[in-house]
Length: 417
Ligand SMILES: C[S@@+](CC[C@H](N)C(=O)[O-])C[C@H]1O[C@@H](n2cnc3c(N)ncnc32)[C@H](O)[C@@H]1O
Image (cartoon, rainbow, N blue to C red; front, side):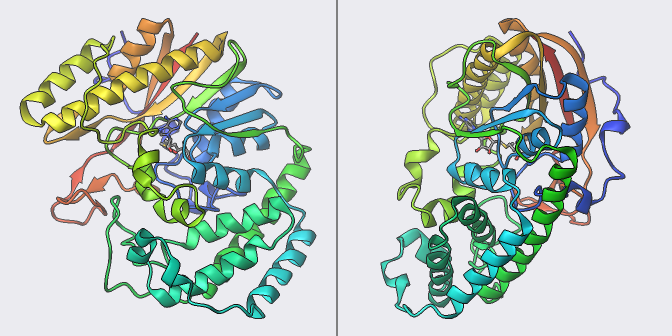
């Protein structure tokens, strides 16, 4: 068994020299997304463990970094996520649009917004939760932009605009943007929604052109990729059908993805009750403990340690590991023999008790039949993702007095079926 604790950092995987702008090349920077990959890691793994034409899957696809890299590198990418907002973003990032056509559509969209006649008070009928987050005049301006986007007839371009709209919602609300939990900032200075929208649209339009040129130069513009809504515990894919999996599961009680994307989820009408969709996300906090056993001894020890101190958290962690095991079984089923799973994850801690996700995952994988060939330890760059949290659990920078360094390293587990 590889000893994760004594592993040395492999600096070549830290990508410390990579600038933030380079991690957002092509369509990678269209939308903010918690815990997204830097594309350089995905690209290196993909080139090492697959060849052009291979099918590459990310069953926790998020905003589609693996899929975009698949497309750029001539692989057939499949991105699956339970979060519909993730699907919308990934589709927008996947499709490079002819720059001329997009330029024309943008002008038409802005004309429609300028001349939009229906200026009623939409806020009055807004979802209560959206009223909580938006001031009425910002909400009404946003609804006007949204109505004009919906008039776009080309579905790919409409989706591109919806991605842009989704990305600006937090900025145009009183959401406290530095928190990992939904928190209001009543003092927040909010710019005019149309100004914010136009600025982000300009950025996305510029990056679309870069992406379009890149794909064209590689001959990959029509590369066949798929974005699916699905649950990693029960994948709708055939046995032995995938050549490579590059993925990163959510961490337990770290990001509540359903909460974090609630503005877009509610605005686009994906649900009117967030609690209903929360259950399909793994890693969320839960009150009921699953009765299923976990095959990893380390997982059982961790749950026991938490039971003494924090019962509720113990339940959430227990459920998380049960779910993780289901996901690994599915991944094993759909992966071809002799092919690889590259799992990127980190350990964490609560109340000074360690949550050793990496060791637990390795134990579960081995019990299912994977051979763990190597584990890479990489340093997280604080330029890209701050590993510090303050006493309230909010992300903070390294200068903060009460900082706690939670995520300093990450592990890449390379496992063969
Ligand atoms: C760490 S993020 C992945 C980010 C991704 N690597 C990227 O670069 O954008 C984990 C993702 O798992 C998704 N997720 C949570 N529960 C899931 C489930 N049961 N099935 C599939 N995806 C799930 C979340 O919505 C989230 O997008």
